[in-house]
Every structure is written in structure tokens, then in C-alpha cells.
Image (cartoon, rainbow over the protein chains, first blue to last red):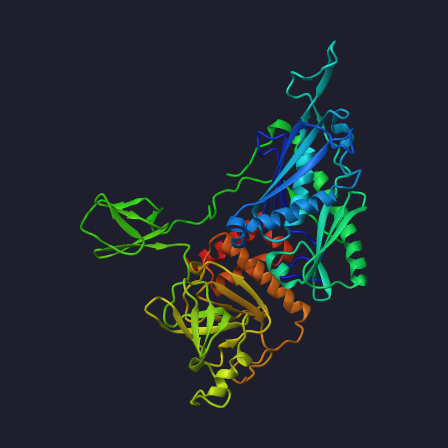
Length: 271
Length: 294
């Protein structure tokens, strides 16, 4: 139970989380997990609800893999990886309870809030899915959507009025937001939070999205190797355990950051 | 039990703030003017513009009589004859192997430069050529010495000694070549229970000390027995210490690695990579090195 850098099979590298780094977004977060660096920005815009869900808002994911992240992503190389990550995030958040979409509705069938989640992969140091999901959760926690009121005219046309106070906004409840835990199979054991070298040695990995209560919302197998059904059960159990402690640690750091308020020294990118 | 630690980011202080400045080194960045005196000849890393000598790389200015050049601090490995390197085989060609050594061009290991079983002065036959892949395949790690340098800068290696050859079980750490100090020997058996090869090209190989000095046939047999946990702990700790030294831009040689290892003993292996623990260990190691010199 000892890896090259001294960690156990279920230990994460030391992570740094900072929210509210991008000023012109509704919410943003930056997560550094070892060498992996991810920036997430969330913009809330008004749009029309989807036809099959007229009284709910929705989330749109877009992932951009910067060419600086790793040499293979030069030029157009990052597009495939980007769409892959975006599709995974869509699946993870497709569970009904993850985000309270009904609170994003302004006018049923006519207006709703659409949250555009933009993920920017700055540096790839192994385990990008976990870092991205942590950053998305932190950014959703940090998102502030302005409160709007719908006024109805005499002719029946609806007007949307934005409140004048810039601090009057609604926050999202992120308790049910899942986080992805990647378990990579190396030899006969599986490890959490693989570095680049460990990822090169593992033939198959299992991506599990776990909520803070330990329930799984989605599962995906990646890699060209095969996984035994028995080991899949073991990996799922490990993923649930690790996922719960991940949520506890993340919530603690987000609450700590929140409690520091506006006096928090902002480190940003030049610190 | 899983351990997940998260923290808020802190602004990083200047690296090596405690290091005393010995001699004033003339450090330049690309675009800095070195001198406006026209009497100097320009060497590597400089160019002339408007009668001024300007640096093109970030590094230290070196002056020999009238020749001014800038030696870059972070550059690819430039081979010198007699250096020890650790490299990885990338290609198997007709009579030679191509080895990746973190330099501008792939290094070359000729079939005539390795030890084959059957004696030193055997003539390499056609069967030897066909059996090349049995000795070294793509992806193998070797330790070798630089025999000569081609005119384009590519390095030619040889393993004509029993201490060089294929490397079996261990951990590779890749650092910048300028951080490895030039010493008399680069193979060290540390008293903590592991051995280390400090390649001049920045590849550092940490492996468990072999029990007895086996006389292998040219060093091509690999020992794939499982390594005991105590040895693996020592190797992981050494690897983290080397990463800590590199993060704080300290020169790597056996004494500095040993002092850093001893300073890290009270901490857990995985804690060494935490920023505050790393600073503490490096401070102690640096202090001991200064006491050694002074």
C-alpha cells in the first residue's frame, strides 16, 4: 500500500481550491491538484426552457483544453478530449437531484436561467476528471444569480426586471452535486488520483461520480484494458468511500473560504 | 482510510530566500543588454543589435578574455565526453540503438559499444544484429557513459563496463541537467539502504542496493523479484527528497540528498511534498551544508 510518492492507494495529492478568480463571471473556481490545474467559470444567462422540461433551467458544459496543458494537445488535438470531458460531465449531472433546476426557472415555458459552465484545462498532471468535477462544484457554490421579477403589463406582455442591488442574488444548493472519482487499475490493485506516470502504467480506469451522501450517479469505464466484474465491485466501494471524504474536505474548505469574506487575500494567477 | 487534504492557496514567497549570495553573478534575461562595449566577441546565447551585446537566453554571463557568452540555466543536456547518463531506448535500428537522454538530439548506442556475452573482443556478426532486440528493447532504461560527440551535437554512448547496462527495478526522477553537480563518481550507495545513479543529463535512478556484487554477463539480465516494503519506503522517501531539492533549485549530489533524507525522517513520506514541510526540510538541509563548508 505504498506508491512512488509515498501515498497510499486511496490518498489524494494536496489540492488548492480558490473561488471567485474571474471577475466577469457569475461564479468561478480554480483547482490545483498536484500538477493538474483547472479553471471553471460559470455564466448565467436567460434563455428559453427545453420543450420536455418547461419549468426547469439547465446547464451547458463546454471544455477547452489549452495547448499548454500537455504537448499532445497542440493545435486541434484538444478538441476530442474536450468533447469527451463535456459529455462525461453531462452524464454526471443528468441525474435529477444534482442541481435544483426548478429554482432556475423564471417563467414556465418562456424564460429560465441557463448556466453555461466553461472549463479550461490549464495544465494536465494526471487525474483531470476529478480536478474538473471539484472545480465545477466549487464554482457552482460560488455562483450568484441575480434575482429577477416578472412584471405583467396590461396587454399581457411580460417584462423582466432586474433588482437594483448587485448583492441581491440567489445561491445554488450544492449538497447533491456529485464529484467524479477516478480509480485506475494498476496490476492487481487500484489507485485513486493517479499521476501522469501512474496513468501510463494503468490499462483501465473506472470513473465514478459520487454525491456527498455516497450515492452513485454515473459510472464510466475508460482505457483499452479489461476489468473483472469482481474488481469493479471493489472499485465502486472504494470510490464511494473516497468520494464521501472528498466531499467533506471540499465543503470544509469552501465554508472556510466563505467565512473569510471580502477580507480574504486573493492569490489569483500571479501569486 | 482515504486522506484528502485541501487548502486555500497562499502566495508563494521567493524561492531560496534563505540562501546566502556568495559571489555576485551577472544574471540576465532575454533582451537584457550585457555590455555596450564593442570590443567583445559574442559567444553562445548573445546577439548584437545597435552596437549593443544583448542576451538571447536567461542565464549567467560568462566571460573568458574577450569572449562573452550566456550559459542558460534551464537547457537541454549538452553532452561532454566521460559523463554518465541514464537514458531510455526509443528505437532499435540496424547496428545501433537510439536513446533518449533529454538532449537536443537522440543519443546513439552502437552495437559495437556494448558488452556481449562471450568476451570483449568478439566481432559483431549478423546474428548479433538480428538478436539486438533480445538485449535492449524500446522502453528499456540503461546507464551508459558518453564516448564521443558527433559534429551535430548528438552523443555516442557506450556501456563497456560492468557497472553500466540495463536498469531493472527502481524509480526514475527527471530534473533539469543544470542541477546535477559534476563529481568524481555518480554511482552512490547511500547508507539509508538504497543506491542512486545521478545522470548528468538530469535523469536520476533510485534503486534498492543489490545484496551481493553479482558478476553479470554485461549487465543485461534483469532482476524482477518483488522489492520488500522497507526498501520501497526508503526509495519513495528519497524520491520525494529529490523532488523537494529540485523545487528549491538546490544542487543535487550525494551529500545534499543524504542531508535532506535525514531531515525528512520525522515526517511521513507523503507529507514531504506539502509546501510548508518541504521548506522546513530544505532549510535544515541547507543549514547543514553550510556548516559543512564553513
